[in-house]
Amino acid sequence: MARIEEISVKNYRVMQNITLKDIKPFSVFLGPNGSGKTTFFDVIGFLSDCLTTNVRKALEKRGIFQEVISRDCQGQEIEIVIKYREDNQSPKITYTVAIALQNGAPIVSRETLKWKRGSRGQPFDFLKFENGGGEVISGENPEINDKRIHYQMDDPSSLAIKTIGQLSDNPRIASLRRFIEEWFLSYFIPDQARQLATAGAMEHLSREGDNIANVVQYLADEHQETLSKILKLLVSRVPQLEKVESEPTIDGRLALLFKDAPFSKPFLARFSSDGTLKLLAYLILLNDPNPPQLLCI
Image (cartoon, rainbow, N blue to C red; front, side):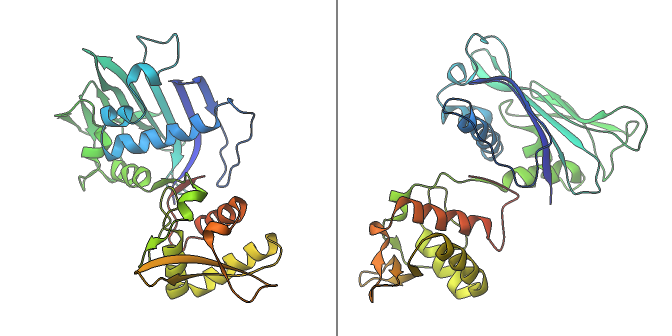
């Protein structure tokens, strides 16, 4: 599984110039309000949205370019640099994407993929684009002297890795595309989890967690061992909690039920505390039988 080791961000909201090094497989970010924790995760979400749609639409979700770029940085680029490895044995790859305004519209002004082959020599770009045009070295293991193929993007606000990463002769680029596509950001909202869901099992928790009852049902049907592990951990942290299950209602929806040990009947999720619902959601995310490549909570 691919893993990020370092992230640098320039001119993205409060993050005018920051670098996070030595990122571990499980990392916790702590800090006071306003220090940039939410903004850091939004950088991850922004890059994912850029790949899913394009830079223009990803920015529209957050306002406009002028609202996302750091204050006093108008006329400059937003830049995100990610250093990652495809697995523990593979060389480090550096992905850089920069976004700027061109004739009032946001475009991908720079986009590169770089690595070093062997223990000697300097890192080199095997993907290099500027303003919608650029070159790519194809193949399983691009070398600096290999043939470069020119491409021109139809839409300069689209990432090159989105288009070129769909071609089978660019496995390194395709690997990055798949990696980013499988990122998942959880913005769990307890009130959403309290709503009755449409009946039917679902494999993964949604962004806001409104399908938590469906996921509990899926785990009960397909991964009973995993659900038992989750509930054991939950019970160890929530005094008196005995059981959690989902049950279909008479109108064809699905209710999430909690049962406390002193009582004979379970109660609906809407009577459960925010903390209990959050803990259940996070345990489900962290014990997903088929987890995303990158999970941000």
